[in-house]
Amino acid sequence: MQNLEKKKIEAIETEVERLNQSSREQLKEMYEILEYLRTTNRFKENKAYKKSSFWTYLQDRFAIREGTFRENSRAFLKHPQESVEYGVGLVAKVQRVCKPEKIKPVFEQIKTEQSKRKTPLNRQRIEEIIQSNAKKSEKIQKTITDWQAMYNAEMIAHEQTRENLRDAMDTITMLKKQIERLKSALLEEVE
Image (cartoon, rainbow, N blue to C red; front, side):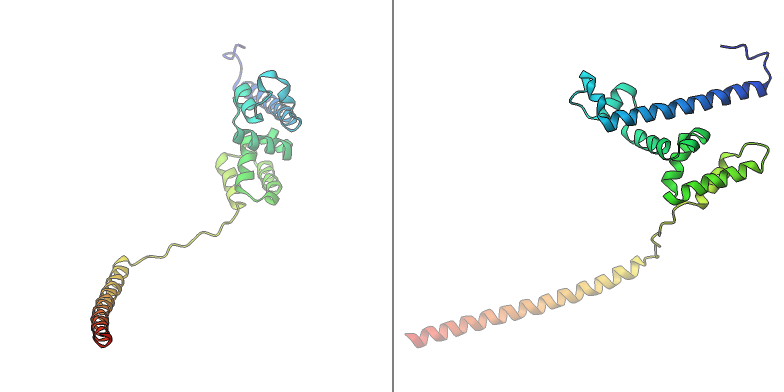
């Protein structure tokens, strides 16, 4: 490790930015290679994974989960320049939050905003840009429910149903008695 005590903060930050950029470029290359292994099934040439899925191979060998791989791979393959410049996480978030046709304009807007400033664009402003271009989903409007009125209406309907049931039971009892009288009258006539 270098002796950082004697360096100015600007030199240290420049070195970190250089390393970060290099790291993103290498990460992009790694995902391109992994995508190649996935699409060609060449990972099965490794005898330990001959009968395994790519996701098992990816998790075991490189500790990358399927969802993470898909999201990062999509970001690096569809938007390589932005992924290297802004980071795969930001690109993946824009892909999740915005419609596909809005992704390029979002990054153009971020670039335009950045060019107007001397200092780096803060995350809060980037988040505002993303949210202003977010997918607009129709949210279900919750109406206020008057539970007391619903309960009272249900109680009235329930009482009416009970009354109808009582009437139906009385009618059934009366009809059963009538059937018994008719049976006995018929049996007397037959004898």
